[in-house]
Length: 446
Image (cartoon, one colour):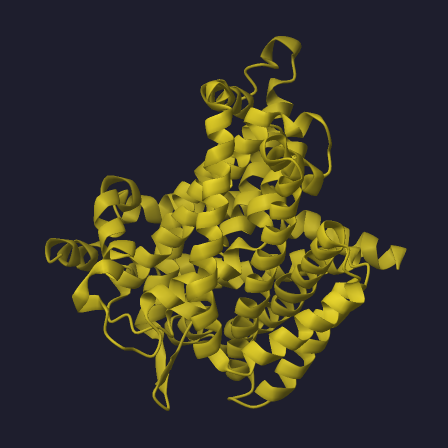
């Protein structure tokens, strides 16, 4: 087992090394320039066309999979535990400056997900009245490479069982054990049963749950976080200044540690930012391609909104709660840091809320990633073995709940990184298809 852990660790050091992080950042910068900084310059436009459209009568039509349902499902797959323990881990490992680089990764990641969703709509297919799409389709049809498309689908399947399932089930069962004293075997059985109930209903049941669950839990999380910041309002500005100073190592410059501090903050900030919003991994376009979006531009805007909520709002609030309460100074454990931040204002209820949030977000991620894996299996085997995959997925949820899965985390990281590689190749080589001219014409019509 030790040998396997060493091998996987070495692979991850390459897969998630500086080259990968720089490439993800480069693609985000490239598309940001290509769409003329739209995510920043036209903030009001994409906000109006996404969440704003949910309050418009003309957009309340009955449909198979609405863009909002697709977004909440993609958001559920992205949020996971990364917005709580992931942020705490980034600060613990990379210092306060890691938060700044999470913002950078998110800003450029908005353009990356825009491009992914755009390509997903262009190259999707209609099979038996259902849209299917994602990187495997735009790789095959756009790059004419079935091999590269199959590699993506295989890696996505592996990531769905690992990072999307077992690690999330383990986090949920662990949180229920710590917060409520429930045995992990009981939690595992409940998680597996609920997973079966939902995933056998297909995307309709998955999206219907996420449409109701994610907005409610996210709003509760935002409300609790804002109350913490209200109680510690005098520390907000100093915390932001501290984040910026540490991002560039200004505080350590006099001691000669400036370069090391900045590199550490940049590494963990960008990597945790990518893990949080999944920009560049290729998961988002799989579900957005199945939606009733009629234009690639609109799907791209929903992608921008997804990253905005996931990282700019959720991760920033969590980071500021940690900074203003100083919980990162009392422990190096991510869960303890997060719990301490909320407990500083809400006492025992804070720990309860953190563990409940981890449980809900982890479960939402788990059911969403089943869809990504299903679509990958569907692509690889022309629609066969979906039921077999679902049975394996349910079993993996129980196993992940009750076992020590350190090696599974590492293997999952490997699959995540390897599925990003063919997707990044496609994003670069198919960039001509993401036309700013078409984008601008749509902008004039809205």
